[in-house]
Amino acid sequence: MKRQNVTILGATGSIGVNTLDVIRRHPDRYRAFALCAHSQIDKLFEQCREFTPAFAVVRDAPLAEELSLLCRKAGLPTEVLHGVAALVAMATHGEVDAVMAAIVGAAGLEPTLAAAQAGKKILLANKEVLVMAGELFMHAVREHGAVLLPVDSEHNAIFQSLPSDFSRGLSESGVRRILLTASGGPFRTTPLAALSDVTPEAACAHPNWVMGRKISVDSASMMNKGLEVIEAHWLFACPPERIQVVVHPQSVIHSLVEYVDGSVLAQLGNPDMRTPIAYALAYPERIDAGVASLDLFQIARLDFEAPDFARFPCLQLAYDALRSGGTAPAVLNAANEVAVAAFLDRQLPFLGIPRLIESTLNAVPSGPEGSLADVLQADAEARHVASRLVRASCPA
Ligand code: NDP
Ligand code: MG
Image 1 (cartoon, rainbow, N blue to C red):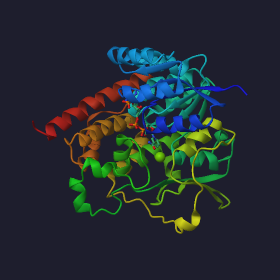
Image 2: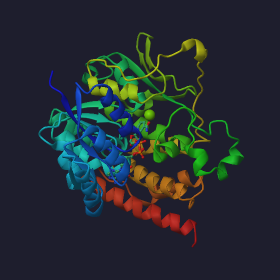
Image 3: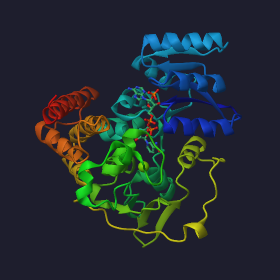
Image 4: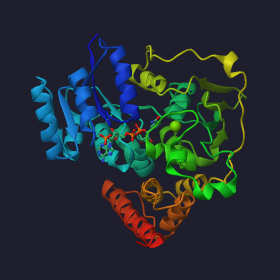
């Protein structure tokens, strides 16, 4: 069996590190061909030392020079590149079989879209790509024969619970609804009055998952689930009214699919991203992911509740943006990225996040998704408006 060459976009992040852990367990199957990061040079150098990729990518020329020097001193053959063009080159390289899309946020759009246009096997963690440009991206996947495998745990669970030919249409497959589970995050039971002054540290302390800071805040505001509703819509061609969010605090059931005969299929497992990563890497085979067996006796019970839209207004904003269509989800995503960064920077209170997103959506008119240029323009405009609103809300 030929080893698969894998490019990891976002190698130094939480998903990137978990991906390398699965690759480490299967050196006969996978080779880390290109490791792409942004700013964490030391971490990337350690990864280069262990995996000796053909290429490494960083943010800019000075960082590339620094990493290149480290690699030369260590006698590594790794060629160091920089910038967005290099990310695109690694996502589309002729020798690459699979691309793990695990950059956080809108920065992942261009290289991930390029991977689709190059007909690659794409392991998609970077949900913002589908939120911003779902129509364009899915079109590129179909037109260029790319293989798209969801890594987001819920979508991976749905993918596993659907028939393999689900792309002919959910109704044709007998699917009634998708039940998208959500942990509810760290503030599910926090008294509402206390939400106004929660800190970034509290928001990033997720009860079940260890993740990057942006997605951790998204989980705390439940914008993550809103983004995932949009993600599910595009991945499975499912209308929003057939996607039901179910709060399930234990994060053991990763999502469910309900069929017209009343059957409900689910995928369960310990909350460990190596499971969906290994599934996507090996699909349609199964490989060891290093994940412990699920101990149902220890878990003992599973709870479910309806989402609280008053507590988590971000969820409603996401459903509304999806229904508006066009560039509205791209505006939602950009405003959310600005809001989360401002919250992490202590320039915006936690409850300011949905307010900022709503004001931005009201200020930036939505147009058709059209081309990549339309999406990028909506993204830029939303960032401009949202940043101005942050500055206005926090006088220097
Ligand atoms: P992290 O913040 O841990 O990692 C982000 C990665 O992206 C890092 O390697 C970072 O590089 C890189 N990066 C950041 N900005 C840029 C940029 N402008 N250009 C190129 N690379 C960049 O995020 P996560 O791993 O948690 O999440 C990654 C994606 O996966 C997100 O879209 C998230 O929603 C999704 N996801 C994550 C899950 C999880 O469990 N973590 C679960 C499901 C989905 P550096 O560190 O060098 O600066
Ligand atoms: Mg998820």
